[in-house]
Image 1 (cartoon, rainbow, N blue to C red):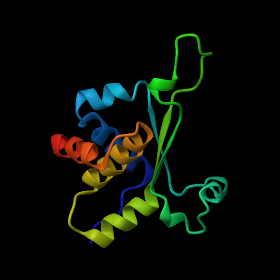
Image 2: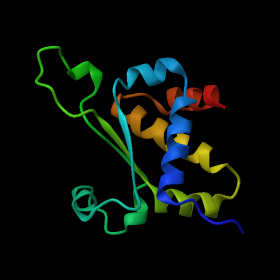
Image 3: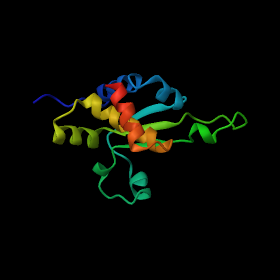
Amino acid sequence: MHALPDIDTFADLAEQAFNELPAPFRLMCGNVSIRVADLADKDILDYFGMSNPYQLSGLYHGVDLTQKSFGDPMVLPDQVWLYRLPILAEWQERGDVSLKFLIAHVLVHEIGHHFGLSDEDMHEIEEAAG
């Protein structure tokens, strides 16, 4: 068994996975920032009514491009949070996909749900990413 990636290695994999997604999908995201934490904090879990931090593998935090305008005050970039330990647990449990594929899957679904994409749309994006 190999060692699990630390948070920095995981963040590098997340950046690689995002950069391999189709260009139109990445452009839709605007200036999104990908952040990595081991687990979601208690406030986030409470907001979603979750008690087990392993239930949440990712979260999109921000305003989608359809709701933004040039007149808006300058704000921090939107963020996609990836929660390393739940993703690693799922990866180990599944054993049938690469870690980068699973990270890409979480990225696509967090961003896709935020933008109102259907599951079919997200599946096509994942297929295009390989």
